Amino acid sequence: MSAIIISENAALAQTVIDIIKTCYDPEIPVDIWELGLIYEIKIDEQNNLSVKMTLTSPSCPVAESLPPEVEQKLKKISGIASAKVILTFNPPWTKDMMSEVAQVELGFM
Figure 1 (cartoon, rainbow, N blue to C red):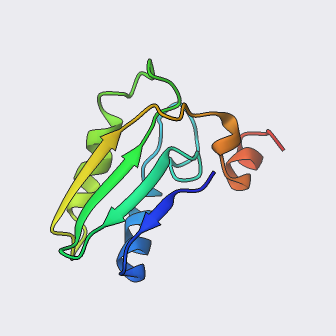
Figure 2 (figure 1 turned 90 degrees about the vertical axis):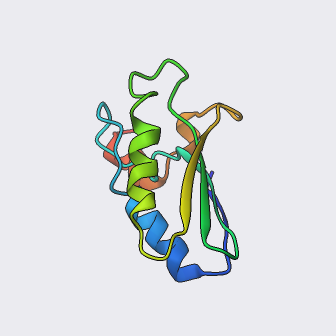
């Protein structure tokens, strides 16, 4: 599964993805983009950003720290008016959501 990207500004959307790729679940040596934890990136006409993400499980030990870390990094992007991370568990994350890069890195391929 790949994230849904809703934005008229492809360059800004790519910058958002690049920043997301600097965020890691500390227990897994793969960034959250490649893990498939990002479900949606939406940038409106005023450059307000919302990112819908999940965690590997509702009981993930970083549930209280990872989403705020992502949000803080996104708020620092030049051109972004505001940034909000929305945590969801629907649909639940599965290993099938990982990119091929992540699957290779973690030995699933």
